[in-house]
Image (cartoon, rainbow, N blue to C red; front, side):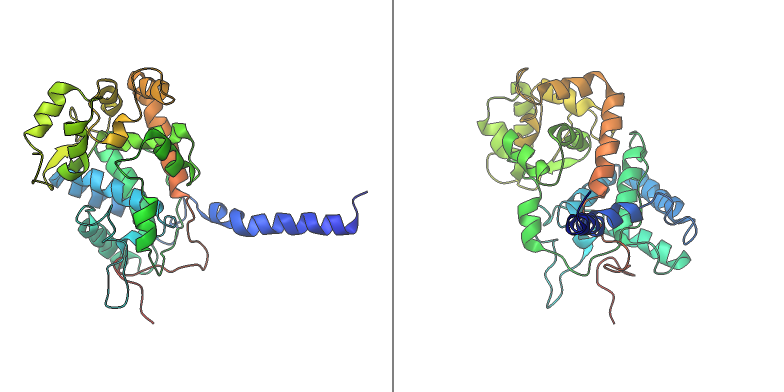
Length: 324
């Protein structure tokens, strides 16, 4: 027989974990807007497809917005908040300042949604769906996005500066940064595959092309013409030298050929014996496996500490907290 005191403790423990961990996952649902805003997903998809057709790089920018939102206090739309006279958001943090893009696309999507379903679809959910639709628009596979996130009423400049993985991290640093968010090393390698699209500034890869030895010499030479040893900090180069506007597995082929643009990229492959080398080879050899693992890791990332229920709010303007 279990004593009454132990029974009560067990009940309390279950209740504690349910309160803290149960509702968030339980309240996110792929059909969250089926009744309240049935055209939500098609509206977001249409806007993303339009934006990507005008500039394919925008797909990578929208995907990155979702990453930089979720890695800072969870997927709550905090990255979208503008600074005000008495509020400092995350846009001026080191990883974001003059780097994040796509805010105007999000504004357009939000405006369209507010016209058909006022006060219903959160900015955080817009980011999650736009990230998925961007990958699909660039040739990647789809995944089902759980919905029902609400928007934060605050942001954290300090967390943005400390929580977003740096392009200068070592392999152990990358593993630690992703592990702190609950990701396995395999999931970290899969999520890093987002660098199969997009661009990076000279300032974040200059040290690699001039000082590192684990880089293809011809590749380094080609980059130096676009990124001098001094100056030209904002000059862009593709993260994937072969198919920078197609979501495929070429990123992993590049790593095997020592053509990772960022220091952190090439850390995933050291030549055959590193702890992540086999995973890089697996994704190079089987793009379908990469697509599946990437989608599953994105779903997991989208579940990072979402605000649900009555927490937070549904912002009517993604750039500012609702007044009143």
